[in-house]
Structures are given as C-alpha cells and as structure tokens.
Length: 445
Image 1 (cartoon, helix red, strand yellow):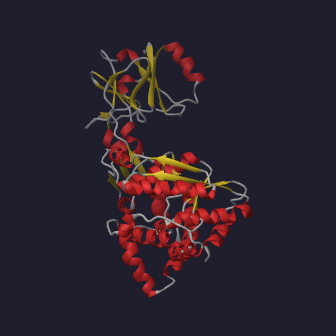
Image 2 (spheres, one colour; image 1 turned 90 degrees about the vertical axis):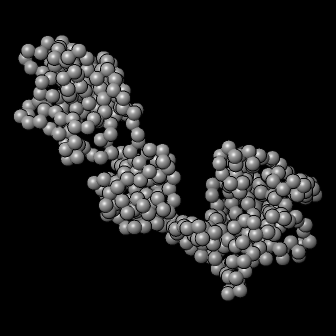
Image 3 (cartoon, helix red, strand yellow; image 1 turned 180 degrees about the vertical axis):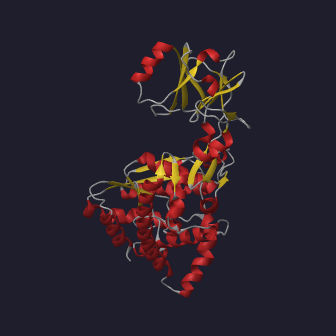
C-alpha cells in the first residue's frame, strides 16, 4: 500500500480532520515518510502539520547529527518544529529501569506536553516485531494485539505499511533520511528479531508482515469483545473492595478480572502472578506480589488485599480513637437517664453500650491477640474469638476488628458484643457508648 494513501485512510478512520497533527520526527526513514505523508494529505483533511524531535543524547555526535537533520528538514519543508532534550540516563537511574524503557517513557511524556494529536511512525514491520517480542517474553491475547492504531492522543497512521514500502516511497520521492547506527547491530532484542526472525518468516511467506498486521487488527476486535464482557463480570463480582465468586466464571473472565484486580489495588500483575491467583480461586491461599507485606488473599470464595496494620494498643479516650487507618471508634460516657433517651432516639444506629463504672483503672483498644475468649452478655457460654471469626467474620475484615480490654480482660469485641461482666444493668450509673465507623460508613459494632 502506498504510504500516503494509508495515512489518509487511517486518519479518516480515526475521524482526524481540521486539527493540528504533530509528527514524532527522529530523522529516520519511517518518521520522514510519515511527515511527508501528512504534508501530502493536509489539504484534504484540513490539517495543521507540525513536528517534534526528542533529543535523547545517547549516541553522542550521531544524536546531534539527527537533531540538525530534523531542524534542516523542517526548515526546508516549512514545518514548525519543537525540539526537547531529555536526560535518559538520569531518569533510568532514578527510576531503576532500562535505558530503553527510560527513553520511551520520557519520549511519551514529551508527547503529552505537546498536546493535541501526535502521530508516531510505527509500521506493519514494527507490529510484527512487537508481536514476536511479546510472544517470546510471554503474553496473552491482549499482548498479541500488538501496537494499537490509536491510544488517547497518539495515532499511528503507518501501521498498514511495511518497512519496504516506506523505503520505496522515500526512494521514489528522493527524500533524505538518517540511519540510527544502533539499529544495524544485534545488541538489542528487537534488532535480533528484525534481522533474523522476521526475514525467516518472510522467507516462509512473503506476505508475513502484512498478515501479522491483519491478525493484530482482528485480535484487537476479539480482545475488545472479551474486555467488555469482563467489565460486566467485574460489576457483578466486585463488592466493597472484594471480588466474590470469581471461580464460577470462565477462565477468560477470571484472567481479565484478576488483572484488573491487581491494577485497582496498585499491585504488579503479569502472567505468572495472574496464573497463581487463578489457582488460588480453587483452593484458597495468599500471594505477596511485591514483597511489601500487602497480601492478595483468596478465602471462602472471596479475593481481597490484606494490608499490614500496625494496630498498636492505645488507651481509650473520649471522642475519636484510631488504631487502624480509616477506622474510627467513637467513645462517649453518658448518665444512665441520658443514655436511655439516646438509645430511644437512635434506634436505627448501631452502637455498643457498656457499664463504664466496672472498668478497672483504664481500658485500651487493641487488635486481635492469640487465645482471646469472651463471654458475651446474654449468653451462658464463653466464645473462642478464633472460632467466632472463622465462622462469622468475612476474611477481608478480620484484621481490623477492634477489641477493648481492661485490667481483668476483654470488655468488648466489635461485631460480637459486650462482655457479660460489662453489661448495662439497672444498677449502672454511667454508660460507655462505642460506635465504630469504617471510612464513610455511618457506624457499626
């Protein structure tokens, strides 16, 4: 396909008309071809064409040569040019990533600052190399979709064009370009694929590059269908930070929902971690994906993240008490008569009431401790906290259950109730009222 025709068709398909399009210009063959094609179709689409060159400074004199070439080319073609210099090595060191990753992230950060529509010169040949690279590293359907034709402000109008067609276009139009010397070596994985794997595939079928581009487009359609289906599953299964019953869904839905689960919780995903969680859906278990102490937990058909809580013991004070972030225990002492009026007015609210006068010396809030037992008011037997939690408390909230104790032991357990010895009786003079608020909840005990 003639590159200029491909660019026209791609921009029309994306509805890009009557706007500014900035070409990412490295000076190489693909980017020069892209800029020339944009200039060729700009009247048809009423475009304002500009260019941006990102100076990575990684190749010494050759990088300076590329910048000078881009400046000269844009001056001759009367194209506004923006040149941005970035510190790739400094960024890589600060963010502990590879030079290639740093260069890419900084380059796209420049594109974000440019604003508007930015066109990059990825071709069908780049598409095949990307698919092979991801396949070699391990990927699913989404990875095999390759480079998208558009992502946000970034468009890739040359994705239907092969590298050979680009070079023929430049030769026919007698257009100059520069060559990145590092592309001629096998020092990078993509170069190995470009120099060896792709030619081998072309030898098997001369249409291999174009066929891969077609396959990527079809896989993208399939992936979008499955992504929409997974979004509907997510809405059904996601409840207050917990995925419930995901094991009942087909594997394709499990995989996509688990990947979103990692993303929603700011945890690193990847094929191995996703597969590990899929196995946990059947048998339960825990995974520490980034060694931060935040655990992905699957228990009783519920998938959630357990965050380490400090939960240090603190003396109970009147007003707000916090031992777990996002969880507040409100405490107030009332005269018996005032409490009875309070209780009659606030029947719809959930709170706990204790006989304040029986507390020995002081009371302290604390997290769960091993071996705790409580005889709740109104019951004639002692309850093991461990057994009660396992039977009655959802796994994802067990780590933030509040306990109140004095010198003689437990006085109150959130969700279980008041100890029999601290129950409010006709002889009670002062009542301790406890209300627990979880983030934006109105209150619970």
